[in-house]
Every structure is written in structure tokens, then in C-alpha cells.
Length: 329
Image 1 (cartoon, rainbow, N blue to C red):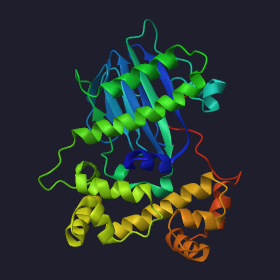
Image 2 (tube, rainbow, N blue to C red; image 1 turned 90 degrees about the vertical axis):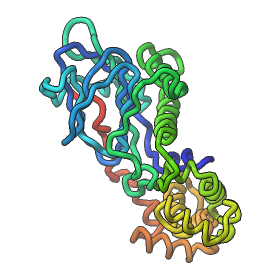
Image 3 (cartoon, rainbow, N blue to C red; image 1 turned 180 degrees about the vertical axis):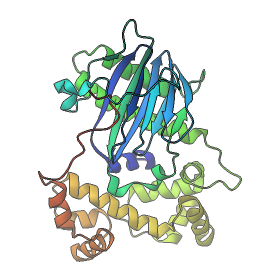
């Protein structure tokens, strides 16, 4: 996979959630923060105000998308002065939503004809291993609707809204796939709008830099390879010293430090999501022996890999039951 897809695949846990809500004025809803959750709000029809925690409200119009990469308490309302209710409706009361197929009935707030329709959703991320790519994002990421801008993102929003508005056979399978698609389009659109060059740093600049992007692709494509700085520099078409300086400046850590971090992050996913023996996991992430892998894993996470696997699958392991982004009764 490419770097962006790889990052999302490693960090995602569980299935995403979503719901349509119809609003009639006056209305205001507060959305709670949930540890490990990233969420979004999309205005499908009408307009409203987004009210961030500790920030200035700003208006949203039809087609606007707001993404919150980290747990973030916020509100939506018909006007900045409207009080925010803690509880309006709970699409999760539908058993399909509770089972995390994400196909929820339309929630209704207020009385009379709906003036605004929003689409809200949440993704569960591994809070213990947040990729620096997401750390680079602002707390509130806003993508205003503009004619001709990000047509694939708009198409994904339209398809998701249509499936939730009028469920058909197969909606339970389509909606999670569309939510995954939406997340990637949101991130792609955001990175595409960021200025690069002129000394810009961070993951937007790293992914836009042909040399560093080529090295990252190579590293993600084959993390088990015994990479050297010189070898990665060759993929980037740069000398060892020039590559190391540029990679460190853009990515935020030296090439081999990032490689080690990514190997162990990938190992966490394999331990959590597969039944591969420890020696196989060690080989897949570039360690010559199970012993060397176990030492590196314990040094990084303060727990042996076998115990991590058991704990991550324990029935008593706390799993967030509330995304914090769907209105709740």
C-alpha cells in the first residue's frame, strides 16, 4: 500500500460509525470527546455553525466538511448564540448501528420541516500509537465546499449520504467501505491544499517531496528489508548526507529511527489482528530472531509481545462504546 493507506490501516481499530441527523431551528448539539476517536461533520443540506471547544464559532454551508483527527469536544447549532443540548437523539438505538454496521436511521431534532441535514461519523484509532502524520493535523480541519474542488471527496459524501438516507440491500457492507473511503479523501484533500516548498516541514511537505516520498514508499513497502540510510537515499536519488538532512527535517525524526518506529507499530497490528507466530511477526518486520524482536518490542512498549497479544484480545479489555460524535439520548 502507499504511505497514507498504510498509516490508516495500522491505526484503525473496529469499524467506523455514522449517522444522518435532520435539524430544525432552534437547535444546538454538543458532541462529546472520546479517547482514541477521530470524527467528522458534513453539512448535506442547509447551513449551521461549528462551535469548537475554546475557539471562535464559524459558519458551515452545504458541502462543507470538518474533520477532527483527535478527540475533540465541539458543538453544532443553527446560530452561535443557541444553547447546546447534551442529548438530542441516539441513532445507536438501532441494533444495526450498535453492531457497528453503521447503517443508522435518520435522527430528527426540533419540530417542523428540517432546515439542515448533517452527516456525522467517527473512526476508532489506536490511541497508543498515533502516527505523526495525524499529529501534524490541526485540531479542527475544515474543507469548505468550492466548485470544482475535490470532486472525489464530494462524490464519497453523496454516496454515503444516499446509503444512510435510503438503506438498500448491501448497505451494511457499503457504508463501512464508504466511510474508509471518505477518511482517505478528507486527508488527501487536506494535504493537497497545504503549501509546500520554501522551507515547509511536516508530513504534507514530506508526501509532496518526490525524493522523501519515494523513500517512504520504499520503506513502507518492505519494512523488513535491512535498510541503511545510504540505501534509502539511493531510492530518493540523494546522497546519504543530503537525504538524511531532508528526511529528518520533513518527517521529524532520522530515517532509521522512523524505520524502527514503523516496524514496531506494524508489529503491534500483526499481534493484534493476526495469529501469526511471534517468530513470523519478527521476520515480517525485519528482526532476525524472535529474541531480538521481543527485546525491541519490550524496550518500546514496556511489555513483551506475547503479553501484548493476550491483553489486546482479552474479553475484559476496555473498548470505547461511544464514539462521542453521534448525538445521544
